[in-house]
Image (cartoon, rainbow, N blue to C red; front, side, top):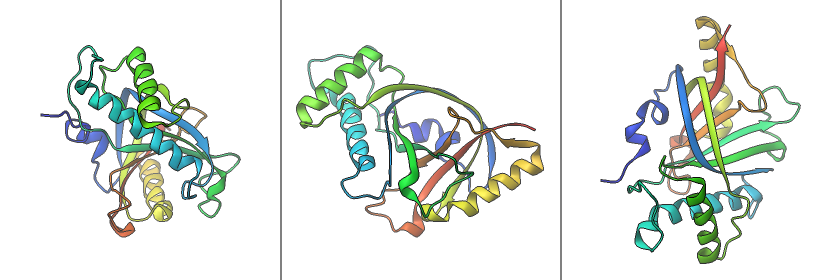
Length: 210
């Protein structure tokens, strides 16, 4: 049976719709960095997502070719994730999406090495006729965080974030944003098939004890 991150690590992918504190361990990702409005047709964000899935599925389907990854096991490609920020803005200004900076990511299985990753980028570029040169092997250890399941459109996130901030204040924590600790979203719904009011998005913020 294919390994499914959502099922094996439910505490990180399927939180309740109320805030909770978690400690997120180190993980490896396919990552593409960029900036600009994620809703822009033919924009940088949509191109980045295309690269992520091209590399991810090249790794998954490597079992069908001659290249062998040590320790390979079949897996369900994990959900798309993103780290977001806007320079010089406290919080998020959803009316100015062009100001977004982002690191779009898909988690990698632990067996994937840097060499395997480089092979997959080259193979995806060759087979998909797609420039995957912006893809990078990224290792992150988020550590102590607060997270919640947000239900609904992305533009409604401020109300959910307010619940997270209230929870932190009551329980002796505070946000701990920095250049390396960012607003994190995990997208559990296919926006092409699910209406916005039913979208499920994990929101995760770095925190520290107050």
